[in-house]
Image (cartoon, rainbow, N blue to C red):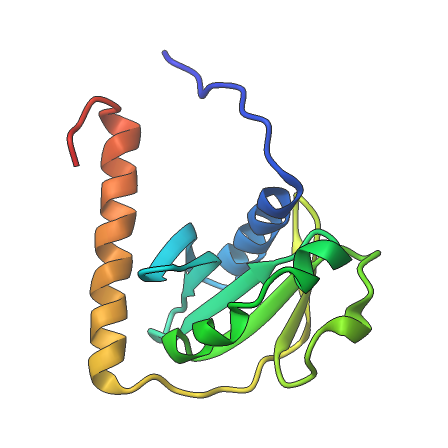
Length: 149
């Protein structure tokens, strides 16, 4: 039986893993590093049990947050938008009109629920199709690393 290669994860990827684990406990399916549209790749896209779509951006440091000028472009691609940071992050930097998740590599906790801004039906349909296609392709590559996608 093959084992997964030993991969060193970056701090933001470790936060994303903890977020995905927590959201899975809430019956969400998550895809990490998901491109919502050309030039915009979110850290975690989560599909909830009622079809809701959440975006979670993971910030590992103040500098990481300060260098992110694209985050407002993600708002039109989800029903709720969250920041995920570790417990030492200066959360006063984060906009109050967004959600807040405190995370580590193993779990997370939602401290502030993001306000809901429901996607238009046509946008939701497009995003659900994109999410499903992306997830299926990732699974196929895991099962058949030589597959041409």
